[in-house]
Length: 176
Image 1 (cartoon, rainbow, N blue to C red):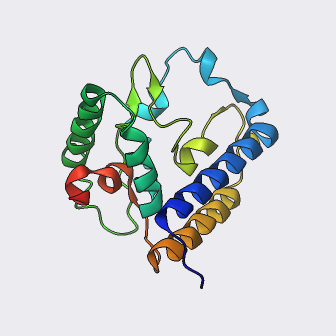
Image 2 (image 1 turned 90 degrees about the horizontal axis):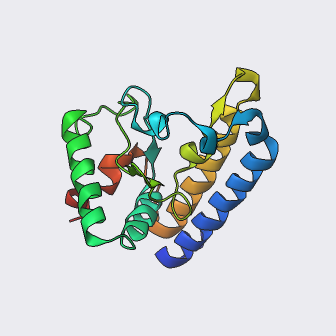
């Protein structure tokens, strides 16, 4: 296996996610309700009984990089929500293979997803409000994309990274 730098891995991750977003937009989103017309913006992101996004190490780095572009005040609010989520939903104690749900700490009321255009996780790219289950992107698509991200992680870090809940993966305490 040919190893690549973290910087190149992040560039390849962004290209992969952009391709995914284009495919979802062209093949599936026309069957979904637009987020721009939602009566309850962010409700899906803030639903602690719904969100269970898990991300890889490379994805967590991309998110932390994206967060550095925020104002210090906003970044501090995000970091506080991350730590609160970990504690409130006992995410650090989660057992491998058991998904715990939480409210996404990356959603800021009045702004939306803080990493939407720079580091949005794959499950979030695929998510939309579909009326009919048959219109949803197939689970196999997300699995294939996560496999590609796993291969990127292997090329950057020399091993698979596994998937962690988003708050645990991006926690500053975990990175220190």
